[in-house]
Amino acid sequence: MRAKHPLTIRWCHWINFPLLALMLWSGLWIYWGNDVYFIGWGSHKLFPFFPTAFYNALGLAQHLADGLAWHFFFGWLFAINGVIYVLYTIVSGEWRYLVPGRESFREAILVMLHDLRIYKGPLPDKKFNGAQQFAYTGVIVMGALSVISGLSIYKPTQLAWLTSLLGGYKAARVEHFLLTIGYVGFFMIHISQVVRAGWNNFRSMVSGYELVKSDE
Amino acid sequence: MSEENKTPLLAPEPPPDPDEAAAAREALERKITEGNREVLARMKAKTRRSFLTAGGAAVAGLAAFKWLMSRRQEGGEPWPLRRMMGINEELWHDYFSTGHLAPDFTGKKPLENKVNSDIGLQDDLDADAWKLQVTGLDGRDEALLLTLDDLRHLPRTTMTTEFKCVEGWSAVMQWSGVRFSDFMNAFAPAKPDTGGLRPEYASLETPDHSYYVGMEMDSLLHPQTLLAYEINGSPLPPEHGAPLRLVTPLKYGLKQIKRIGSINYQTNRPADYWAERGYDWYDGL
Image (tube, rainbow over the protein chains, first blue to last red):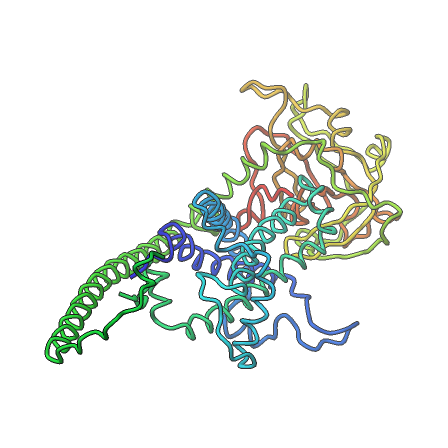
């Protein structure tokens, strides 16, 4: 039995989950007000964000005012929780496991090849491998960028310097949106990896402990 | 390594007693099994406790969320969310400065032209008969009636700013008119009975009273807040709020009222069309 995840990190992780979900949900309500983004070129739309069926299935239409009210309520909680997490990792030294180091890039490629069943060799036995380090640090950077780009479109006149820094109001809006799409991608990979890793791993994110084979 | 260890063994070890070896193995296995059992039991207890805590937290979170959403509605939103809008307003109002300017895109970006709402513009307007009615003025009890020419005689300001709609779109447009601060210099409001140099708010309404916005004085006195009579170099067309509208990059479009019929200076917070329908009263950008 080995201690793996500290209590604070587990709380922050699980509190973040519903908060981020609420931010995405209310964000979609807001986005519905002017849903002009699509994948394509010129006026050729390959895939619109979002198809009508998507709105209908989730009941997203006609909630702009609610979306704004929720977004600027839960946004604070989301940001505060993120700040607590980052401060904790710094103070506790946990950041050492999480922030990519010199070996991380090579290792991340190895892990990726391994997961794609191309590389069959052994993987380093560490708390977080290179791929995890990039993913977990990257998603924190994304969170910070979401808050920053969010503020820049929330107060584009009072924080005009910030909005300009991000390339202007329209650009900042696109950036804020792309980060959301990024979370969805992160979530899907994260969930599939958690399923693959199994119960011992999942349990450790709740209880903090994992079972390991002992040599004795 | 010591000398002793280097010394080769002279005789092979005596063959172990099979019974003894089996007993030792058994004892070791028993020890491992017991050890495992103990570890597993401890793990089980920890797991149970943490999952119960997690379950409790999830239930508490859900209950808190249900509570939040089921509160009495204030202007179309549960009161805690409305209260949060107020807190956000105070935070940003503290940060507010008339020195924080929206970028001016004069000569830098092509002008666009986008029209959205027509609430309050249903009646046909008799442009010649239109007069701006101003109340709450210093030294006058009755309303002051102003023509568009009166306003054109005040200092003229032109700016090219990005107009932002609460829906999410934005468009660069050029506006000309009189700064609200210049307008207020010309037609000063009465000092409030409650003290203070000036009233904190103004209410602006369409002539038919069907659209109305409340503005706080700080935003009104910002140098980029105009009573505009021209867009992109031409007089305002009806759909843009002829003959006079409010334009300010400090607020979403829903506050930038078209076809202003009256302005009333007041000390209490004015009613606001969209704030009664779920939106923030402040809507500050």
